[in-house]
Amino acid sequence: MKRWLAILTVVIGLAMSNLAVAQLQWRETRDVPGRSLTDPRVTDGIEIYGSNGTITIRTTRRIQVRVFTILGQNVSTVTLNPGTSELRIGSRGIFIVKIGNLTQKVAL
Image (cartoon, rainbow, N blue to C red; front, side, top):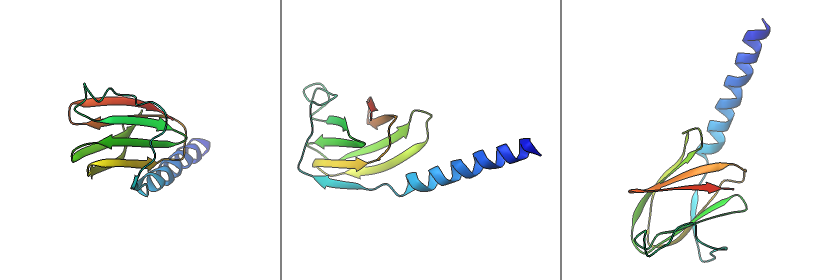
């Protein structure tokens, strides 16, 4: 009985975290915090920032962005327009950002 209760607790916890992750939204912004984690000369003009629970991406062209947790759970898949956009995750952790052939770890 204790084992089933533990399994049920884990399943409910995962379902709740999936629900919270599914509600994340990208928004356009003008502020860019700190230093970029990528060199735009090497990454075709793409810059990635991570700070205070937010992933910020600045790009000069339209790109498809995929964000994953360190365990491989998809957090967001979106096509961003040129400019600066941010995804407020609001929790700490390490996330993987994939843009075309570019893969970058972001610690929040």
